[in-house]
Image 1 (cartoon, rainbow, N blue to C red):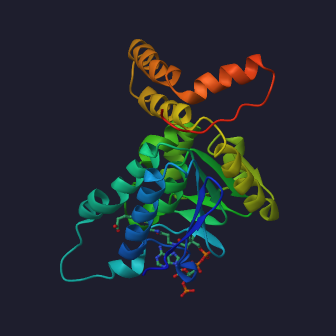
Image 2 (cartoon, rainbow, N blue to C red; image 1 turned 120 degrees about the horizontal axis):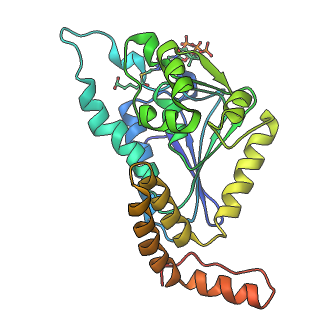
Length: 262
Ligand code: T3D
């Protein structure tokens, strides 16, 4: 069995660690397959109510393993890799019906940066940096980066970062709104784990619906978004966690959410 992704099953949540530390956790086909399987299992497990993604060693992820791209006779079809591997990965993260926290423990480059930014809440160690490294090797930013980054940091910064391939340090990333928080290196894992554990006690169905609404807002008109909020709120209002939340409020006690659909 592959050990390229380490899976830890905690109380109500899972920690997934990219594990090719000697290659800064760069993606090869094996890592893609292991991560896809781990995410699918987490998505399907009702007892798993949050996911934490991080990297082993001194890097988070250096994107595609360029060792696998050593020249052959014909140029590779990189559209095929995106179609088969990177695009499904981003969709898995965005469609995951529970929150995904990313703890960026070191450099996040190329697809590694954009996979991190596809997660719901991103924490980064002060020593971490984000690099849109694609321009350095003649490629186009992928893994949703051309969609995500301008929305996070604005058009001017996204363009410069993508055309120049310059690194952004964690504290700058926080200041620009690219990530939720930059924390001292030693605080990263305790904070990220506490956040995942906290999310695992929250109304999971409502959070999943919130993710849907936020994703749709990127392309919806206000009017369409209002309709969507109506439909999603209808669903949220039928969940046991909503009933529990209201009862708990009225009884002046902390809620006991189960995350169950019905
Ligand atoms: O191909 C497709 O399917 C299309 C999809 C593309 C998606 C992409 O992600 S394209 C972008 C690919 N990634 C990169 O271009 C980043 C390459 N890496 C770097 O620029 C640097 O390694 C970093 C800036 C990330 C970190 O620099 P530094 O100085 O901290 O570390 P290092 O010494 O460069 O790397 C440490 C080791 O990891 C080193 O191996 P060694 O010399 O100790 O044996 C290095 O070769 C290896 N490594 C780092 N990144 C990759 C890698 N090996 C293979 N592929 C990598 N991407």
